[in-house]
Image 1 (tube, rainbow, N blue to C red):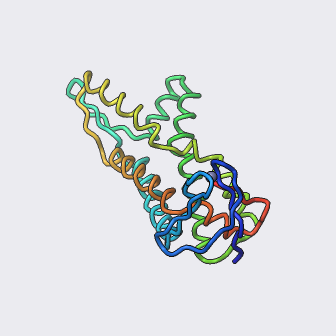
Image 2: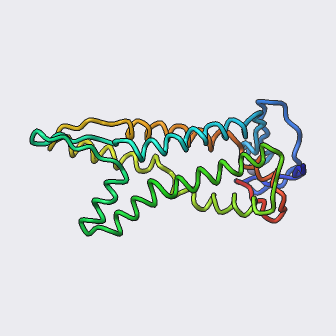
Length: 207
Ligand SMILES: [Zn+2]
């Protein structure tokens, strides 16, 4: 396994020598005191566990009832997938496809790709495609930031609750849990630690 000997500060650009740290310690930039890197023991394994949990919650969020409307004595359960289908049927195909991409496809691709990178680095394997894969995941990540959509969901729930009785289903709670576990999984591991274990030098970019 190779280890970078120099590290560039993301904020002030100062190049400094990388030193070994004890678990829990952080190294700060001598120029601007920004935290350069932390020694988070078991970070990759913790991130891997949280990513697997996130994938399970993503499946529950999409296949369970998200919310039930009770209107004029009738109950109607709604799933994210059925909502996408309804939008397409009603002639809002671009909106339906955008919701499908942002709430189903992008998180699925990002979580499974991130999980695969973590699994390979955990096993001490670094096939040559892993660097480009991880770099492309960073591009996909803004689309997989589910917490952004949470505000939209709350606005919709408040508006709809004025028209009908709403019961939040298992899918909704799984979606909330997914936001917590996916955010925690990105935070559990320092991306420099992953880059340091990847094989292609020119693919290494600071977080
Ligand atoms: Zn600095």
